[in-house]
Image 1: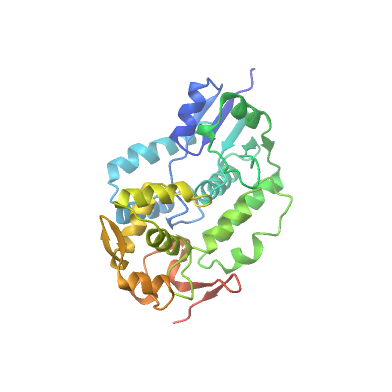
Image 2: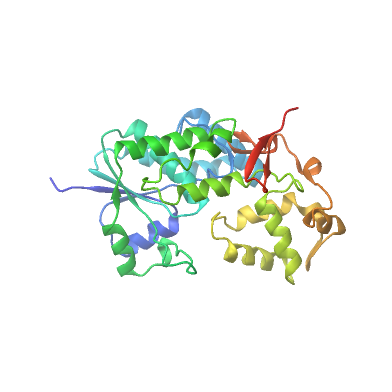
Length: 314
């Protein structure tokens, strides 16, 4: 019997590009953004999907029909794929992809035990070169990536699952302590993605996290005629988070009190004071319903001087 392959990709652009290049095998597109909103470790369970829909409905006004058609139907297709000999994972280096990847590995550990699982990883071309998404590679490059894919050992699978369990726990403190302890892992971008994740908790200096501070800094140091111009710049400069325009739109909604105008883009006096760390915005932006993984975002603060998280006790 001819060996068959199932590709699980990080998005529709990768799937469509690979189909265009006539890669053999079947395709599943993992349509989630588990780097945002509450997650539970039991990927694919009813509780898991209920939490995800509640977050997407609340934060992004996603309706149930779209959620079912876009995400759940594709997940159900994944559940039906049992006959393939090899499962190939296509996930990029950024936080968005890395969190989705460890969630998928956790699911595979539980439901596809014993299958050959391989990982296609992006390659960093050099210090000053930006890692290109799969869909931007030429045919020769993407075939080389594919040929150099790595087979995950059971230890690798256990490690990714363990990091996922910690990501979904109600405290990021153990994740902070453990994520660097496996230098031999084939998940070469996971440690830097987790470090980026930890910096998303509010800073002790002004109550905003690294992403929110970067938005204010970018808005203040350039002249943008429209909010869309600001978002385009943020997308171009983002090298670790992998956010799309909808994520930056959501951040700007949460920060709107710190802007006097979006057309053109201008910070308010309060926004400039927060940016310059003359004012702490924590009390005004705090939201008990905001989660990063399994942890409440505003129950922890990030201390940049020590690169450590501290738990807030109430």
